[in-house]
View 1 (spheres, rainbow, N blue to C red):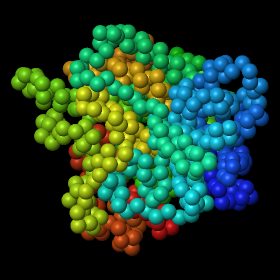
View 2 (view 1 turned 180 degrees about the horizontal axis):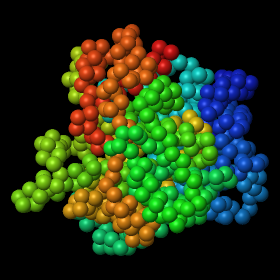
View 3 (view 1 turned 90 degrees about the vertical axis):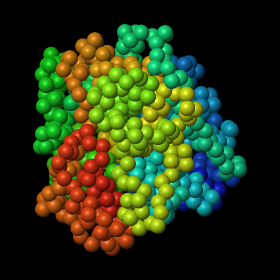
View 4 (view 1 turned 60 degrees about the horizontal axis):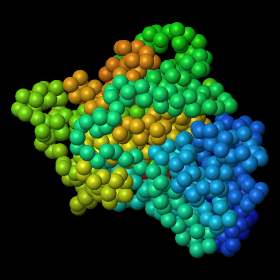
Length: 637
């Protein structure tokens, strides 16, 4: 886990490029506090500058980057890790290795194979750049799920890239904020797709690479991977090919191997631990080979949000395995709202996600003891872990069921009837229906626009490839894993962990698990009769006794903050919250309507609000708070 940055220029000299690279490195030094380096290479009329800041986790002695080849002068920088680098390394019998790490293996793969061939061989999280003087190309690349970020920007004919946005703002010059994106932001809670909130600064899409021609200065972006789901509405899927028992066995085999690979490190690896089955299973698999595993849990004083009792029950049930593990607990409280300006500085873009606060807190306590941790992120998006997937599955069944079955479904899922009344036929439109913060009419008022039209995912270039023949559950999963996962869930995990110089590893985002899950019959993922999401995970973890029965079948509790409790008591707000919401900040900024914000402030209540509430008055006010503080930092600061 590190930070990378670079410049391709036909007009700057090597000295100027190095000066710019140094500035870029300083602006993301938190990603790599252990060391820093830069180098400039030449190809015809253009120079290529690579910069690197290092967080030392693997190959502590010889793992510094950029890495280069003495044969053809090719070079590479990469943020992240190839977990299967040892297996790939075995294929090279004619290389005299200069390092013991994974970056040199990636270099050799790119030297010998086409970019898509090399990338499809990698199992890991990675974003990097490969300079290929022989072919006179430069390749920017990103892992399948976009676990590692990579931004790029054109400045005066030059191409700049970096792990974060700040280096592109600091050295590349200020960028205009895209006010036209505000309606999208307040609808989706983040910005899906390639465009960031800053004009001209783009994300390289997940599962893609950018191929830059060093002769012409032109480039193209190519996709090398997309998780493909069976194009069938039949719920049986591959049932004729795999039984539930066989599926559980295969899942467990891949999952435990994914954890094993992600334990490869030259420093201690810890694990986040909430009460959910995802992080519990990851920790349980890891502790079998690392008995003194450090565990990190974030708790709340608000009882309905606090998963610490469930964590303690899980550890007690597996006491023989966890007897030597070290459990560290921190508390996320109302005062953490006061940290929002610092968090938004790290996130760089406003995302309206209540989980940002506890995520930052657990990363903080973990970073004081370890450099890298395992997490449970990704399981919900790959194996249908959210309640909205249950409702989507129930809606499809309802449309094709007899009256008796329809009645049973409506009784089992109280929100189903209302959802059916508004359910769009297009899965790309259905994706946001249950989670929209504001209607277009409300957005017009909030933003002071005559009329608001929110673009769809296709317009935002964020949509997966769908042809309408997929089962609705699989269509929902395809959208979720292409949009919300990289640009919302994983973005917040990467930026907040790296704010504390902490590497996070996500076993559930092993591409083998994702491809396996995509081919499964939908009712192996969602069991409507039992009302269980992530059904095959629960079955497998229970069968193989990785989790005790209670933990394996425990109802899912979303990982979020008690925003309603914190925001409903104005007298207890941290000073920065009061300044943003009831001070003169909003009026001075002139973006949001002060009268509507005042109304939103009065509408926050704890009545009927819990961790499973999708949209509440607190969520709406939190979005206003986050946006206002972000705007103050990046526009007014």
